[in-house]
Length: 510
Image (cartoon, rainbow, N blue to C red; front, side, top):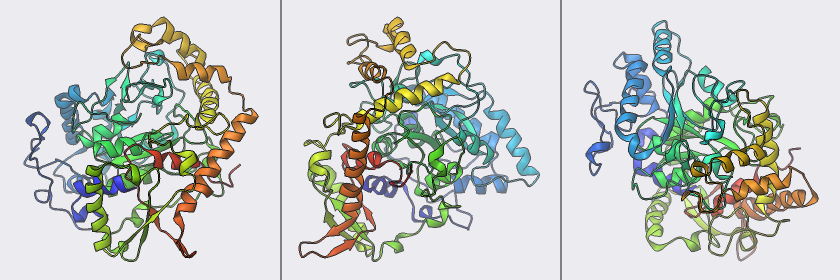
């Protein structure tokens, strides 16, 4: 999506757009510290400038013995202590991080390298279960003290890849499903995540903590979840690269869910290459998530082989959806986007205005994100509230050490703790509408009624054959069809991205 290109180009040196084989020169070509307030600047570590360091550069430093994983973990922890009081991007740190780093350093000394993430500290969103000394709470005090039965599948893959789980990142409580009106990035347990570029601006989306921590140079990589725009939105707003995988590419087992039809786990990085390395580590089939086993879900062995230089743009055809998307972009943002368009066309690419045929019906007239748009038989939320009831209840049923077993129990806890949890309108400024969505989720009782199936069929058809697929198969005024390679979206309101969320799993999946 275009906003990812914009933020990538703002951070990337040309060499970082691919996985290089030559050792990078760390002391040069690093982004400038100009215009960064002193409190946020990173001081050199043993004469090494680690500002905006990439995973590839870290691995070279590790292999050359100029830096150890223990060194870098301590460096990251010091960074947390220095700046995270301003950002509140982290909800909890792993007390065993240094010990794990030492163990991975020992493996490296013995010649055992697990892969590109060996010894690299990362953060995971607080809705991904970690079976360790940390809590998994989705930002809610209600789950404090609960014990998960196992690591989330993606967390276990990260550990096997040699990544160090430095901590849990803050998030919108219950991944934004609890309220119609809420402060995005706020959780009672973690506080308010703030945008590092402007502390008064929204960090946008429930995965704001993971995005902000990467943007602020706390960690090089983090992992978030998206039901609808919760990876793409924070990546855009906080100037990082976010990858929202197609549903079924990454497992959701052990992740506090919202919708089985739309949930996915993805990565954040400061460069495209880093985000792809993160994706590589978590992709794979899981018998605990049937959508990852679908015959239609193709999973590459190595996504880094697809990272290329700008030469691949020569001859590429990009579609720019207008109605409900580009047409609603403010002039100042269009100026920024146009510079990227120029870079694409200068490299030999072509940008063609196209349309989502479903735009008039699927996208609100103001272009604002709205998963309740449409009547119940056409609304995304008709699907979400049923899926959330069944999914959250199933997740809670496996926990020990807690009396919270159902969504109804969450409602009751919030009512008993109104001061912190904002159960009713007026209780808490972060939740102006109280917990109205949770109430509707409970009222649904998880029943997959005809209205549920009508809504699911409708949003999938509209977002696929009448949405993304149709826009990619552009028909000119003279009736010719042009097969486009990709779509460019730069609408900060998220309307175009909502179609990708609603499209969900592959059409032929059960």
